[in-house]
Every structure is written in C-alpha cells, then in structure tokens.
Image (tube, rainbow, N blue to C red):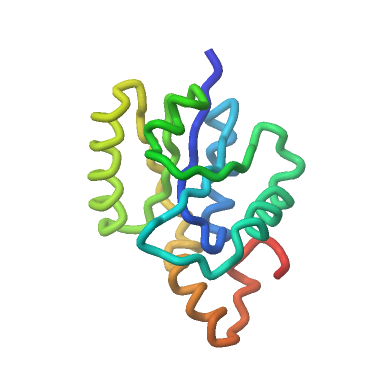
Length: 150
C-alpha cells in the first residue's frame, strides 16, 4: 500500500522551514500532497495562484510531491486522496499543544488518519509565516526565509 501524506497549511508564504519538512518527509512517504487550505479567519497576503506556482517550482524535481488547494475538512481531503498520514512540523511546545488538539480531532473524524510530527530544524525554528508576512508587508527582505524568488 502506498504511503501518502497530506501536508496541510495556509502556506502564506511557504517558507524554508516548510520546504525542509517536505524534503525530510519524502524519505518517509511515497507521496506528499502539499494542501493549501482556505482559512476563513485569514485573508491571504500572497496570492494563492502565485504560491501554488512557486511551491510547484520548488519541488519540480520531485514527482512524488503534488500541490493542491482545498476548502473542506483536512480529514476529508485525506480520505479523498487515500492518504493515511498528515505531516506537520513543530517549532516549539506551543505548536505541539495546538497541533496535538487538531490531530485528535482529525483522528476522531477519520480513524485511519495518523499525524506525523517532525521537529523543525533548529535553523528554521524562529521562522513563521506570520512574521515573514509582516516583514514583507513593510518592505523588508524575506529572501533568506523562502525557497523561491518573489
């Protein structure tokens, strides 16, 4: 049976930390689907089509990585793609508490779904999409935090 993982997130923007999680996940899974979800509580800073294109370019040499968008429960998108794993990165204990709660709900909604947590590489532990958006919004250079050119 093929091991398929969904890597869900808003990816606004997709960072080098996200890239690192996917590259490490490739060693564990046959396919990784980067799933850009629509968060009703947030408006996007970076255009969705632009982000799909850039993420696709980052992983163009990795046919086992796919980029999709979705507007439904993560547990349902996993069923639709026959994925039994969610891939998530953890930077700190605050991330763990938040992600653990989500993992429990996803398991309740889809009992075949396992969440796999990878600890963030220390060099990316301080990087968050929220901070990068703020830096970009005010004209700061974010090139060292993202794996593509703006």
